Length: 539
Picture 1 (cartoon, rainbow, N blue to C red):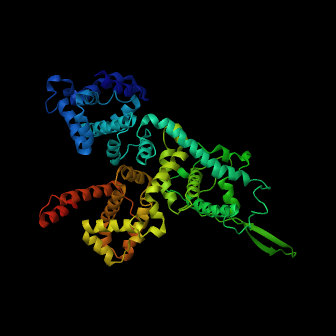
Picture 2: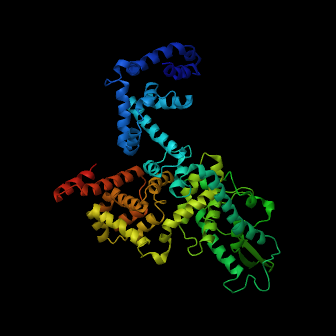
């Protein structure tokens, strides 16, 4: 009971109102008495198995866990992890020994405010079990990838750096053996520094100053030979300009990418290094325009004009600082250099943005410091799976974007033929909306937190693109009333500017589609299938 009364007395005795603070002892006594009247059965052993006892409370938590994560519940059951080993203390002491005092007080704020406070307590305990399972899974000598996928599919908890670790495993960057992580990351990050040195820093040294050693009689800027180093330099500049234009508008709904990174590339931001950075290269590549005219005395004058910058574009930071969007620009430029067959395609910036955001926000400072390198390798792995979407000549192949769009429409026709027919009759082609949804993995359809939540499940699913097709289908069904009631222009406007809403509602429809597919194998008559479908979509 001392663990129960402690936080109560601490809050009352810390009251800035001196009169109330003076009577903290009396107030604590009465509040503690009232609270104990609600939880006293937890402290009476003979009532443990009654409806109001601790046994019933523990069972309520396990019932919740079974409902929301049956695999995790089954795992605990098979291992013989009895609730008395941990839930007894959690519930009896209202979590007062599981967190530090400020966190206990925060939990109790919500606990005391909730009319059904013990339902709230059961939910918190259930969430704690799921979080603990995350941590245990990631701290094991070998990560159980099957269990990890199951946990991640339902959403990864924010904080503690769990998401950054999970994504790196799910994207096949980190190996399953946690004992290998230190050496592996050290090797990969050193490799990235080597790529940075060879493709940006060393060429940047050649490009600085007034005298250039790479300008020779045989190879010079006007050399028409396609194998000329200068020809490649100019092609790289064209790619860099496109990347620069795109990353300056990355995720405008948050200010993160405009802010300075705490871990810039020191060799590039140092003004005394004499290296032509990508920032300087962009500035030198853009042609300066000038207006030529004569003044009143007849003297010819030129007035230079600067390139117009769109309002939504991010500005460069002062010398010595580097914004997050500049780090993303560098990663994309390296990727384009190392993948000349594909190069950079507009939209890749939207794929890399959430990856870098998660890694650069990692509370682990060491991992945060190397977010750039980790983003590069995870982005490369992800692109190896979706690269065909960015190659136009493969659009109509079995692995191209055309086939993916058709898969979504096939799903829609299967689950909601009326809605599919409506889109067909109005001539709403999938290229108008599904092309962007699928190519950019929905990164432009939702706000960043919702994109991250969808990607938790996307990366966790072994058949991740089947999951993506189902989510896209669910998105269309979520706005079916708008589509059916509107005309062509209304439909286009809604699909191309997907309404703001709760992404959980979309995922709920997704799970109903899965349930419907499963039920099709168990329903034997057309009437039962029809009634079942009607029931599902009125949930």
